Image (tube, rainbow, N blue to C red; front, side, top):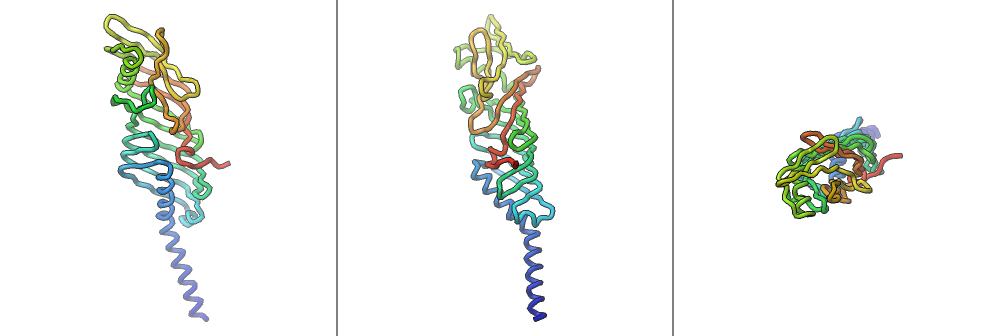
Length: 243
C-alpha cells in the first residue's frame, strides 16, 4: 500500500513539474494558432507567455503575452516589424485587459483604399484598453509628399513640384507658376484623411475596414504628419475586453 502511494505521489509530482515547465509552451502554441486564424503572418517571430505561477496557464490565464515579429502581414496591414505586449489575458474567454505596441515600416494605403504605389510608410504606436487603445500614426514628410503628389495627379491630372507641411494641419501644394493652400481633414466616420482646398477635397489616406482604427484628429509640423485615433486591438486579435 505504501509503495502504491509513493508511485501515485511521484506521478503527481512529475505531472506537476511537467505542467509547470510545459504550460508556457502549450499556451504559446494556442496563442500562435489564434493569431494565424485572425489573419496574422510574419517572416519571423518570437512569442512568449508569462504567468505567475506558470500553472495558471493550464486554466487559460496569462499575466502577459509578448510578441516580436518581422515581415508582418495582418489582414491588409503590412509592416516591417511589430512589437506587442498584451496584459491580463484569459485565453479561454479570449479577453485581454490592456495592450501596448508599435508597428514600424507600415505600408500606407492611399486615398483609393489600395496600397500606395509610392514608398510611403508610417509608424503606428498604441497603448491602453484592448478595445480602445490610444493610437498615434506618424507619417514622415517624404511619405506625405509622395502620397499627396500621387493623389493630386490622380484627381486633377496636375503634377506637383513640391508639397510643404504647414502647421497646424495644412499643406501647401506647389506646381509650376502657382501654389495652393489646403487643410487636412478627417472624413465622416474617421476612416480616412483628405486635403480640402478651393478645388475640392482630395482623399489622401484611407484606413482599410479590416483594420479597426478610428481616426479622430490630424496635425502636421514641419517634418511629420501625425494622425491620432483609437485602435480596437481586441478585434484585431479576435478577442474581446473583459467586463
